[in-house]
Image (cartoon, rainbow, N blue to C red; front, side, top):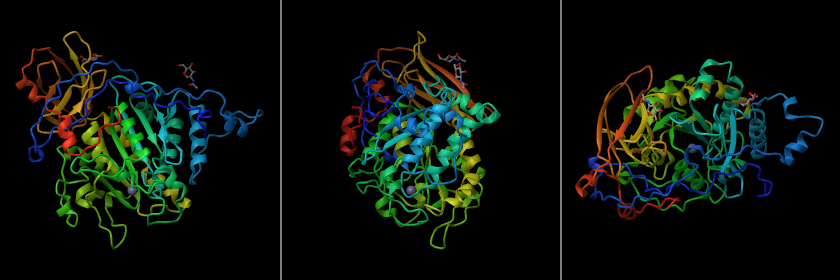
Amino acid sequence: MGEKNSVVPRIPDVTEKKRRERGPIKKNHLLRSKMLRILLVVTVAFVGANGIAIGQETSGDSELARHYNSRYSIFDEPYNIEFKYHNYEQMSRFLRTTSLRFQNLTALYSIGKSVKGRDLWVMVVSSSPYEHMIGKPDVKYVANIHGNEAVGRELMLHLIHLLVTKYGSDQYITWLLDNTRIHILPSMNPDGFEVSKEGSCDGGQGRYNARGFDLNRNFPDYFKQNNKKSQPETEAVKEWVSKIQFVLSGSLHGGALVASYPFDNTPNSLFQSYTSTPSLSPDDDVFRHLSLTYSQNHGSMFRGAACSASQPGFKHGITNGAEWYPLTGGMQDFNYVWNGCMEITLELSCCKYPPAEDLPHYWEENRVSLIKFLAEAHRGVHGFVIDENGNPVERASVKVKSRDISFFTTKYGEFWRILLPGVYKLEVYANGYSPREIEFMVIEQHPTLLNITLHTTKITHDDERRHVTASEEERRRKGRRKPVWS
Ligand SMILES: *[C@@H]1O[C@H](CO)[C@@H](O)[C@H](O)[C@H]1NC(C)=O
Ligand SMILES: *[C@@H]1O[C@H](CO)[C@@H](O)[C@H](O)[C@H]1NC(C)=O
Ligand SMILES: [Zn+2]
């Protein structure tokens, strides 16, 4: 599809506040250099951000017009999704048809193009598809990162179909879509998929993008320098997640049956690549819970059976990523450390690209877990950081004491932390304000709402140092790429 025919508007250029690179606050054992603060506070106003402007398709979709000639409207056709693999054209058509039929529930946008110029479609399903609902979480699924891992891609189309057709009749799905914006990227590697072979259970044909890069080794890494040249598909995802504050995410793969959680990499992977040493994050309890939510609601994952004699089995169908095998440049660590988004990796089928006749089985196995997992975005604590005048404080660092990864507030001052029941302390820092520490409780039944008012202060450099954010200099020293938005 050429530019002119490209009917779906893209995410607008980065116009948001020029932001500092998101930096984790490090655990002591990871703290290798002193933290310097960034003095520069850029105050350029920004637009878009959470509610990216994604316009509805206008008229002039010539392909659809040809397909549904003047005698028919798409509303005359039954709205079905078959259990077969959809190539790029068929997938695009399904998504466009869905966005036309369910204009109040869906929005279709492209986050960029693959090497070969295929759109990286994202479909939002929500009762507020075009606008971020202030105070309510945005969540996502990303599938088909490895082009030959095809089950997740098809499941995403079925999930979209289920959500839009059950809204209004199924109470749980109605609640979910009324309170969550679900963004679904069915294929992050459409070029790889096109050269993959149905029935091919193993192997690498189609795994990589059109330039031969493994996209799940292509992200900035927390532990090690990643020298792989960043690919257009990766850049698109990085820009996307920098514009929308996603709270929870699933990355869908195949070739195993397990829910795997951060960290994927480890500080000393050189020595650990042949052993199975876990690399635990400060939110390990939460990641285990999220992974168990998936495996327990899944048709067979929880049993943890090995896919073959040469593969490991997994207790309760979950594993720490590095404990399975460490990798550099994975997407889930990136989401968590850089973007305050809890992402886990879902391996959904022993066979990477099983015959289409098996698809009903995979859908049945994953249907409930795909939905229940997303609802976990509503667990824990959320709220707003505001100043004395009630204005939102953007980019405040929100850290749960003893969980040394900082999340940051949105332009509306919102924050989310998924937490299990318990008593916690929240540490909130923002440039120009006195830091605050607030104790709060999380219960099982519903999320805790916590509004925090910060008071302006004349700060000394000593105080500022507590606002721990890795400096540009430190990032460069660690060899990380500058983010696309700077
Ligand atoms: C979509 O929303 C608009 C505005 O709220 C409403 O008038 C219209 O009936 C809705 N359409 C459908 C199909 O629900
Ligand atoms: C929390 O702050 C938000 C945004 O300022 C406001 O809409 C909401 O009513 C507040 N809730 C409570 C319980 O203070
Ligand atoms: Zn994979």
